[in-house]
Image (cartoon, rainbow, N blue to C red; front, side, top):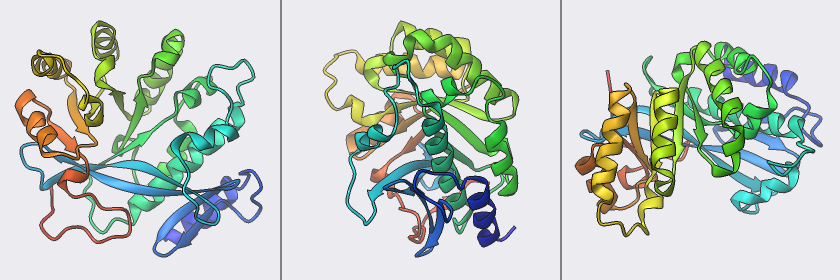
Amino acid sequence: MPLHQLIEHFNYRLGSSPGNYSGPFVFKNGVVQGVYGPIQIGSMLSPVRLTDDPNCITGYSAKLQLTNRPAEPLHGDDIEHLLSNPLAPSLDTLSILSFDRLSRTVHMLNYLLLPTQTETDTLFLDVDPRHILGVKENHGVYFEEIIVRCGLETRNVVITVPVNPAYARFQQQLNQGLENYRRRGYQIALKFDYAALGQHANQLIQALGPNYVIVAANSLDKVRETKACEKLRQWNALVRSIGGRSILSNVTQIKNSALARNVGFEHVEGDFYGSESFGLPLAQNTALCA
């Protein structure tokens, strides 16, 4: 289906965003943007690469670009005033579901506009834990309709969930939600900061058996542990033992690129390797994996 028809379809399906009556999606300057109240939602699709061959792209990690209307920069936490406190009894499920679905649809439509894709490419989409908690059953059914409309399959999508101590008491419900996604064919990724790696993280990885496990490189910047490298090697070995693949994300410095190779991360992502904001041409020397 042509992009403009997809946008018209999703404007009809998702046309109930706050304060928006003409539909939440617009195609402007060669990219798709979403509108949620005073917020404009854009995408930055950052390549996920093989560590041993960074020219080989295996997928894309979708990151939010949020601005006011007109374009005034927003900080990451500014959207919280539109959404409820994640642990409050008065959880505004509708607003969380609406924003999360709108954001993922923006990413999906922009992914379709990439000049080069392969059938084995994956799109990593962050899912707010509050979204998983807010949907009681059949996780992923609604979004599966969007994926199919876009001519893709659920196996192309990696549901990425940050592991946050604030949600520890809801871990059983989160695990059940992720299993619901998996049953519908989605891949699963868990995202950690270095400080969260430990016995609890190992138990969670072994229990869920995620397809990918991600560590943020920026969380390593202040690590002073003498055995940090050995800890990461053991952690990567654990991920491989359950059939998963590891990613070092947000790599911006040569030292973290070298670390990824030395401790066994299979994939890397970040500006250090050259990252395209959507709408800019791919680097000429970038090759896709067969």
